[in-house]
Length: 382
Ligand SMILES: Cc1ncc(COP(=O)(O)O)c(C=O)c1O
Image (cartoon, rainbow, N blue to C red; front, side):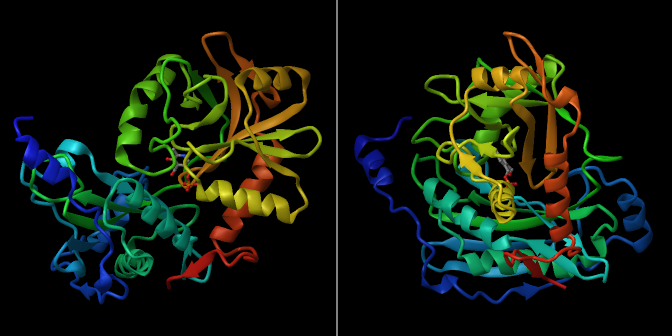
């Protein structure tokens, strides 16, 4: 890369950033947009928002450098970031993100679902990527302040406000080392119901050419690079007429890991549930919530490795009753069909089953405040 050995050594010896002592309770300066979207225009955009295409008027933003730690916390008008072409993130992909939703209750208030779990996962992602961890209270405050300021953008009915916290390495420097500067920001996007007319079973393509993560890699964290590397496999799924890709483990190429953006569960004829163990997969908050709710109702849940051959055999014998994918965006998607180079098979006749649908309702009812919240997962923002 044209740097002297001495300089390269110095760069690599750069410290991994830490949160800094000033990070814990940052006051956010709130600067409402001078000319926000008109009520008429907002209403028009909310008619059919789709996913991730329209955005609210504001963003939360906090900056980090080694001298000041986390500082300059603001919620302000949503705007472009001016980025020097040598900004570190543009070259070495030191970037992480999160995804969570705010839900409108029937009484007009707004719920967040387990934002503390997103804050914790964001910190873990930062640590894995040698980035400055955002203190969890700062993460939660940024999300809450943005939701409060942009409350007019909360869709009603089965819609929600999707929140996207993210962090980029913003130091202007081409050396390969942990950046000394970061921008943490949160943007918000109103989204409609993921499935119009109820959850439709998805078909999935088993990726035999590409893997997502190996032991010691970054599979368990939410860094942008994981998603860039998954796109080719997802395109292969689409080419084979499937909705989503499912990845196998990187060593034996047999064990089911997860979909491109969702975890996976299997429901058996003895009433038990199985989900692949943590390690190289993203520790999904929906996954964790499903395990807790299933255990509450006495269901035996196994976090165990499961091979693609066993999946095929159990679907054929009838031992496997259902399979479903789960994540924040869709909550639960029944899996109706599995396709691979060695042939296709159906699950529960290709239809949505009662375990997936029952679990989906339980979760959604808690999220919208329609059911009791035995695990204290809901944080009322408004
Ligand atoms: C790779 C991957 N797995 C699983 C999930 C599900 O995680 P969560 O339930 O926290 O949304 C996601 C979505 O964030 C994901 O991107």
